[in-house]
Length: 329
Image (cartoon, rainbow, N blue to C red; front, side, top):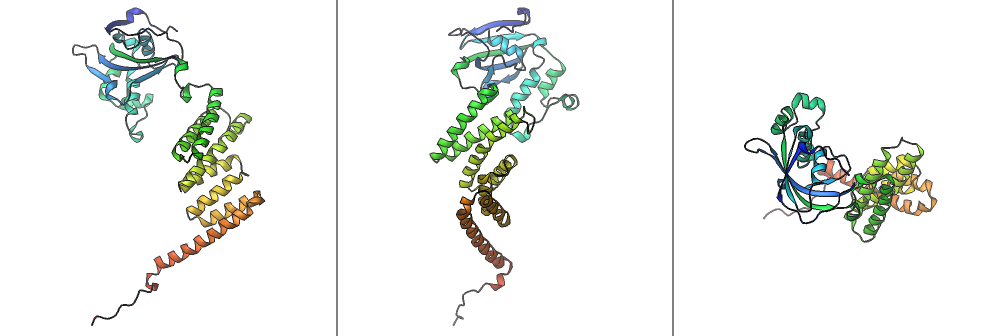
């Protein structure tokens, strides 16, 4: 793989030699620390990855926004430290890359979208990056290669996978979630089900709603949503159960488990009428559930009776009979 610009646009100087030359190819993952400096007299520091939460990570061949980084890391050996002076024509995108990396360190609610109109009217959002965007110049990158991994040596993240690989990963995550659930590790089970659901949602975005491919993915999503809701039911997170079961019913109106679990969640949230409706619908769809539904409805009736008593006590406190005490002598 060779995406190197002409040598005259990049000047390299080695600070520390590396320990091993590793071949590069598409899919190779490179982790490195970097410093970015202006090429002025004081070599003004712009960014230093060591002040951030983790080093930079590149997967070669994935069209990273700053192509020059893919080029220069491929000129390096493992554990090498080198400086690269890059012509301004190669680093025009750096202010936007830097903004993305800086914003990632902030809480989500503090991040600000940066479209072309925003840049024109308000700038990038960082004074030094605004100045660099307005006055492009050569930049110096000091790179330290921490690791170089071939595609077979690390577990790919979902965005790196093909659609078929994503489907296989969904099944693997579902099995992991089921095993964690059986081991009563609800946290691990929820993480697995949630991750798998997110992958399916990515795949569904590529398909037209209600077309065969979309429907197939929706049916893959249903058991994950049901399993997730079961975990949340144990945690008594009733509104999460209601939300996920309601989504299941958008895909399958006759899903008995969704009706029954949503009924239990409504009961837990004291939505008694809705709970009763869901339980009755579950019994209509599966007559074998009728004994369980009768039991749930009886519990529901008792819950409602206790709720009515509590409401009366709250609204009419003067009706409460206080124990009598003798007059002081």
